Length: 359
Image (cartoon, rainbow, N blue to C red; front, side, top):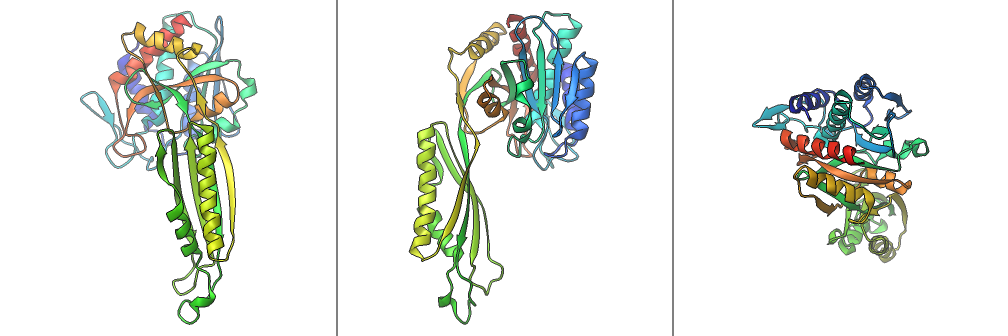
């Protein structure tokens, strides 16, 4: 039986531990301590990922979450109002993804105290997920015994199962211009900012279609208002759940930059880097089918949905595992309005407990 008060207390304890990306040691040590108390053997790797194992019977199962948070995420003061946990409004709450960590800890606690049969469990709580899935990329996946699992890093109603996520390419460009004094001889210069601006006007950005998005998020250039800028850096991305659409979108962004540079008689250096690959599941996949059955067994109708965002699950699936994301009930993540209902965390924990019984 899921202990609602204990789950809430665990969650509140965790969100009070500062763990912005790259500064997770205190959080890692606390999670490791709790897992050791539950009988797990625990390791911390070089990037502070927590990897824990508990023997059991049958086919091993992975339970995954991440411990880092976005900013503003220091000095979080959780507030509980009418069964919903918020921050005090000055920071994020950190339910992304400490709700997931708390749910895993509560489920395992119930399994141990009620002496429930369970498969061998591998719990992985990663670091630096928010800054490019760094922890999952550094994790030695070859040491994992589990070939399937559940990650707790999605929002929405209880029972929401993320079954598809995009491939993500990063784009970095340097537009070259020619410096000149803007007051005495501007005609001798080539304004790199102007070149970049023309490229951006011609570049499809934003919501391209239901599967594809693109963005230029960072522009850096110029050193003084009276110097024609000779260099501008642009950093952006494109994502799509359709690999062909992603390739076409990236090509359009690259061509817009090249054509603008050609128009002004200059050059542009462009680098396209794959950040992570996408994945897609159907109701026929065993992990999805069993998770749907667990939802229905506790009275929750499952919701299968795609996402436009990436997570550690992209990395796990690219390495040959079958892992899906299950909602923890969190809402408005990455904002000071982030919140999660205690009842939704309990519902998620009940789904997972049922899943373990049937696994």
